Image (cartoon, rainbow, N blue to C red; front, side):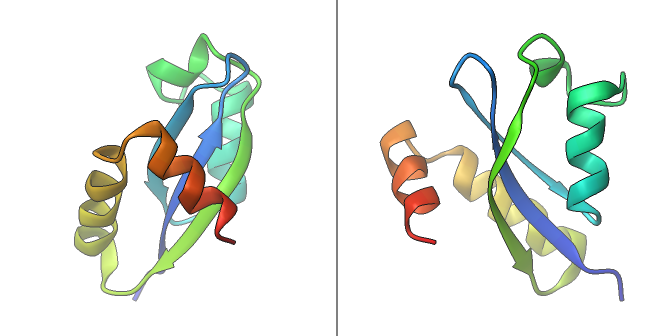
Length: 84
């Protein structure tokens, strides 16, 4: 079974972007250098990885966790990042 990750990157403008992937390093490179990046991060480069979590249960569970995190307020996301 493929391992999925939820991640948060901080954009150059200080905003936070949450996503899922099977390869965090590849996805970070895409966000910074490729047109395969999310439209949101393309205009806010460079981005840096600030948080990642391995998710058990496949893509479905990763998507659920991504959705949960995206619904958090900025302050709550920063608390999550600092809890590492």
